[in-house]
Image 1 (cartoon, one colour):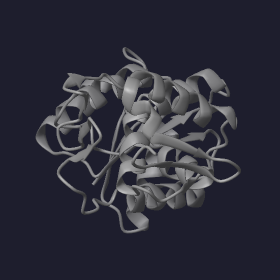
Image 2 (cartoon, rainbow, N blue to C red):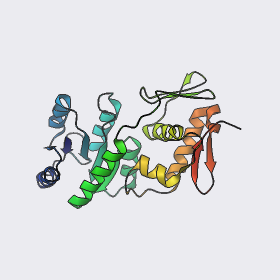
Image 3 (cartoon, rainbow, N blue to C red):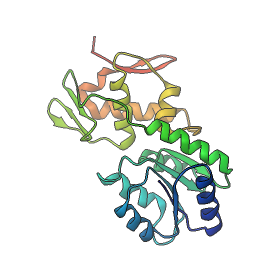
Image 4 (tube, rainbow, N blue to C red):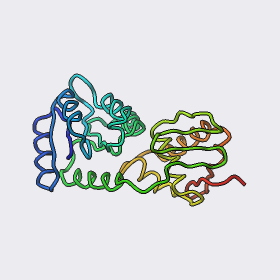
Amino acid sequence: MIYLLEDDDSIRKLVVYTLQSQGFEARGFCVPNEFDEAVEKELPQLILLDIMLPIEDGISILKRLKASLKTRDIPVIMLTAKNSEYDRVIGLDMGADDFISKPFGMMELVARIKAVLRRSTPQKKPHSYNIEGLYVCPQEHIVKVNGEEISLTYKEFEILTMLLLNRNIVVSRNDMMDEIWGYGFEIENRTLDVHIRTLRSKLKDAGKLIKTVRGIGYKIGDSE
């Protein structure tokens, strides 16, 4: 089931019709309270969320979704007419899986949805990671360094767990951008570097475990 929260009637009806014609179950909502009531009754597989909405904007709704244990793992694609890089970066850093600007083609939207669903398919992962004083539990969203709990943003946590899942293997910049920021998303090249730098700083002594492999990407492994 895919939920669409969009106040424009014509767009909402067209998207729902297209998704249903492509074999998806889909429901559209024009106001946040109707959407919230539906989520309480049935969790969707993916959410399409417009930013410009009456009563409550899409960024605020995204924040609520990602703050709830019940809904934080549901992939979200943001829809917007805005071209502001600030809105795109804020939305993605708060946990959105992709970002598509209006006007968009229906087949492009379907392709983006399929790509996000492929990326969000659960993979078999260890229950927790322990490496030189760094403890990470993906299921409980816990990070500790030498017993001290560390607070990370959603994207910082995704970067850390991706590196840990590929421990001692170099993860390319392109793979990290595609996996964490989303299919086809154009983002300034320094964004990943800034997140890595902030992550290292927050991890304190464990920050040295994240190594830069010049010209390729990053890896996490035992300190030398």
